[in-house]
Amino acid sequence: MPIKYWTKGIFDGATKISGPTMTESILSKTVACYACPIGCGRYIELKEGSYAGLRGPGPEYETIAAFGSLCLNDNLESIAKANDLCNRYGLDTISAGSTIAFAMECYEKGLITKKETIGVELTWGNHEAIVKMVELMGRKEGFGAILADGVKEASRRIGKGSEKFAMHVKGLEVPMHEPRRHKSMGLEYATSNRGACHLQGTPMFIERGMLMPEYGLKKKMDGFSIEHKPEITTLYQDLGAAFNALGVCIFTIFDVTPVDLIARAYTALTGHGIDKTSLRETGERIWNLKRTFNMKCGITPRDDTLPQRFTGEQLNEGAAKNSVCELEPMMKQYYELRKWDSSSGKPSKAKLGTFLGKNS
Image (cartoon, rainbow, N blue to C red; front, side, top):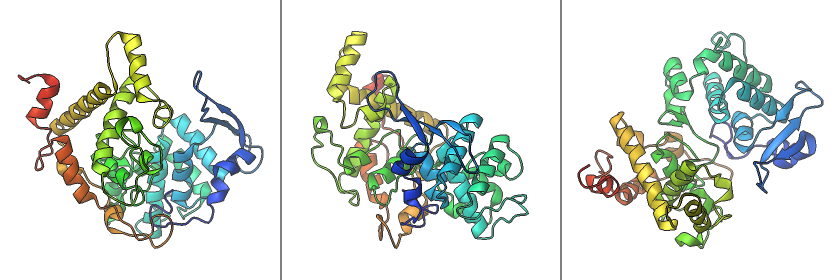
C-alpha cells in the first residue's frame, strides 16, 4: 500500500485501518451483487467517536489506502466518513484522497500555508482536516475549490515546482498499487487510455499468483522483474477491455471463472460464436480504437509515462525497498507488441486494417 504520498515504505498505523480491524470494529454486514458468492460490498456503523451515527456503505481497499496510509491517517472512522462524503458528493475516493495527500506534501514543503487553506491545517495524519477538505472539495469552497479538479489542475494552480511530485498519468491520479513493487502496473498506468487506472487491465494479478493457464500463465511472475511484463500487460488490457464491455466484474474472472466459460455464456446469450482467442481479439480492437481516438485528441508518446517518483526515486524501507520502475525498456517492447509507431505512438494502418477492413 502507498504511504505518505508514495515516499515511505512502512506505516506504523497500518493495522488500525486493516480489514480485520474494520471487521471487528465498524462492519455491520457484507452485501453482494445478485447471486455472487464473494460479497465484497460492506456496510458499516459507527457507534462512538467523532463520527458516531454514520451508517451505510463502507470503504474498500482503495479508499482505505487513499484516505489512510497515503495521508498517514490511521483513524478508520474518519476514512469511513470521507468515503461517505465522497459517495454523497459524487467524488472518486482514489482521486480525492490522492489530491489531499498531494496538498499535504505541498503544506509540508511550505508551498501552501494556513492562509491559502483558510485555516485548515493540512498536516500528515490530521483526520479532521482530511474530512473537512473532502467537504470543501465537494462544494468547491475555499481551498477545496483549488483541489476539486484533481492533482494535475491543483499543481498547475499552486505552481512553485509542485508539478514535480503531482502523482498522475494523463491527468488521472494513481491507484493504490505500488509500481516499484508490481512493475507490470507501472506499464499499465503509463499506457492506459484513461490515465493511471487499475481497472483497464490488472497484470499484477499474475505477479500475485492469480494464474491464467488458459493463456499459458501457469506460474507466478516476479513483480520486481520487467521480463515478460509487456506481454502480460497487453493481455490483461485486452481482456479488461472485453470484460468491461461485457459488464462483467473482474473479481469474478481472473483466477476464478474460466474465460472459456465467459465465451460460452456470451455465445449462448447472443448466438454469435466466440472463444477465448476471439474474445481477446475483440478487446484488442477496443483498446486500439480508444488509442486512435486519444491520438485524434492530442495524446502523444510523451503522455505514456509515469511520475518521476516511481522511475527515479527509491524507497529505503518496506516491500518495494531499493527499487524503481524501469519504464523505458518495457515501453519499447510494448509499442512493438501493439504494432504502434515508435515515434508517433499511433496504431499502424496494418493493425487497424485487420479490425476495420482494408479500405479504412
